Length: 623
Image (cartoon, rainbow, N blue to C red; front, side, top):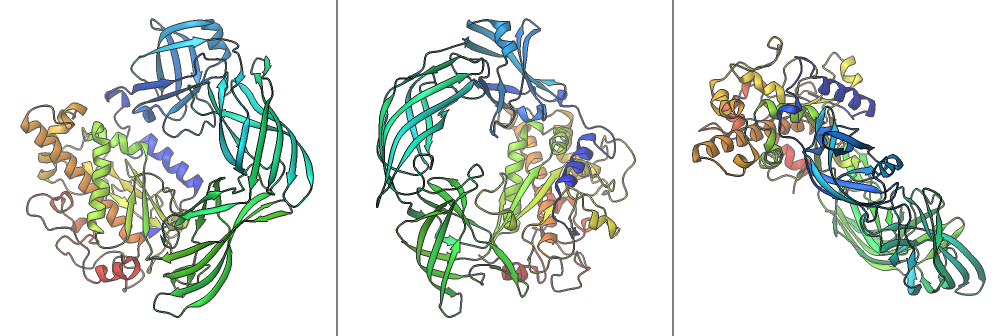
């Protein structure tokens, strides 16, 4: 009923509760589910000590935070590799080939079985072909020439390029830089080179940074060669190649998304942008000049500076920063929530005390209606709970069904539900809802919004429903928030959960066992979910998936409703539900929402917002 901004430490504490299964004993073990499976392993050929092995597969996230990869001879491990720290790859597990592993295998070609392990689980075996060496030749095919911008990314062709923790590879550039307008400086720069692809030693990328003569436009002429030092200490370098580059001032090409809104990140594309955490003295500004016309208002002159977030030399992102004025979220620069800016933008790059302006470009930016982005974060306990429902193999279908159900309920207003953390909206315009397993508060609730206070007007677009909140606990309310999927099993006559029935759990409903017993007694396999098996079995599985998706989706939509300032948005600040029991009303109390409504079964009422809630939602999030 209340809302809070999620604290990092609090989230960690909530995760501990979820993993421990509190309250009510341990969840089903992952060993009862199909084993995680490796689909592919990318590794450079030949591999060196320090090479990265990039592993993709199915259900590898179930192996926990510290997985290992082992090479096997029969059932005995030849070596065990730890995950590479800071690899930055969210789509795969990345392991470092250790010196111990290289020594155990020896140089040459090898074919062996490998498994990934963690949390007491092991993947199915995967056959890996691996060529190992301790050294390799280095070559650079040609130098660089042509027109360029600062921070352009250039692909070098050659051989013997290294990546991961194999060693260091740099492009050593020596020459003279002649600045436009006069003046010459000496250049002696080492530019890091990285692999284009983890398993390809013939191509590397280099960034043409301000180390090549500074921030100003001008011409660079000289030579370049590759220099490499392997992790074992061996060095190599190529012959020098000529280099001739003419650097241009920064340019603007396009603003993605002419329709912006508060909290959105607008992507600006161009060339020659500066910035980044590793370059604290460098930045890019956008100076805008023109007129801004608020919706329903009068045009007024507007000049200002935008400080975008650096992505690369060809991309920055401008945040439409928010602030609250008279209980309304507005764009800070424009002083309004909606309107149109027409004018120009000029890119400015700064390095230390040096500043360069590029050519101005026309800019028309429309501030449209606000959008409430909702990011669903699934905790480990959620996946354990799916196993209790017999639907562990249907996690993708259920997640997509949850999103679909929420968007159906919020049809007609700007609620955008995501399964991936947004990159096009800032955290100031993103609500995070955690979906887990057991109710950590011990009450058997389906969900609980633990952010502070009734946010009428949705001025806190950044609520986080999850973790724990000391402010909420101090007021005497339960501290842990989120959606608690395991509690939904209390609808069963045989929940098969440890402990007594919690105080806020629902009474058993026969419909629940009718829907879920076929898959709880015989868990749905991946093949069955894809349609294999009898027509009756397919119908049973489809019904269970649709019902659970709907129940979780409706619960999550209800908790989001609290975050948006409901129910009774124009009523008392302490009123979080409707006072009476309406047919299909999403913001009714939990006890007034029967299973058939939540699961969309039979002739049950369609779930909708009731009373003044639809008009209120349109007033804050109209499309």
